[in-house]
Image (cartoon, rainbow, N blue to C red; front, side, top):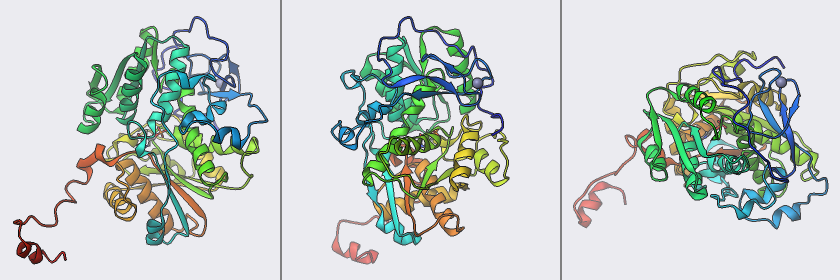
Length: 434
Ligand SMILES: *Cc1c(COP(=O)(O)O)cnc(C)c1O
Ligand SMILES: [Zn+2]
């Protein structure tokens, strides 16, 4: 593929952040090095995210044990640490206080399947994680890295859910925690960070402004672990656990099709990485699968690039109710395009009205209350079916990444009491509900 157009943060401070003094033996399990996604050059495991040679993004590379079995994994704890052999974490990771995310429900969604005309559909429901989004997974891995790097401050720029997860994990770890958010963020997401930390910083700007500020602070201050900036390679690996869990919960097999929301694009690329690793390790049978990306039309740089058949991703100014997906300049966009094109999937986008309808579609068919990101994913599923991009006869999984109570305003105008009545049978009978 061609060089990434957006992956290197524009105002990257030095790619090499404040160095760790000593990294203890086995601190990163089976991880071997950080390798550049563009030029392949390797550097030692450390708090770095950009290649010194070409500024490409760094990714964790491993020497996996070839004798890892399904039984060994199944005998592990009911959280992401059952896959610790496949993550950049120490073998004793369970002994350090963390939020123990993961191993969330994979629900067979027969009502929604029937509604949309699909044979087999599952919802991977990450709304039940400790702070009610998939971000607890990535933050748990970033926290482990921050500990090993002796970081003094645990921090992030966030579209909301990440701040919730960082603030909670930092509290449990007893670390100083500072989280940065756009000041126009949904009120419940602000509160859900502020309960855990005194240092919630609201920035007048959009996420891309907040992200730039974080890069600047990471360059100025020593010992800050910004989970999605200077420890991003470790953070990103946490999303692989979604892929591992989906395969394990389907009975150690891969789905045929999976629909995943795209903000920075990290999660989507890591679910694909997880599937590839499971195949390489012989833990699942090798078979084709298609990966689909979901965006909101009001922030759809990856979907626009996909549809125009180009690798060039043009940054946008987000304008959508799906604030958790509102990244106008997604770091992993080129790799999302690669994965979706290579697997025969697609990237699609839906309007805010479709997102609201998607929230209700999932709630009323499956009893799952998702936030705007999940409304986006559900609405994109529907659109992919209606446009014939998704094969309705194949086994399909959608990922619900967040929780509806955090974005009540998105639909509170559309749902509410069907009637307000006196406490009498006559009044009830008059409503016609019975
Ligand atoms: C952050 C987030 C995403 C997207 O994650 P990326 O890895 O940045 O693409 C999806 N859904 C929710 C609810 C999120 O908070
Ligand atoms: Zn490089």
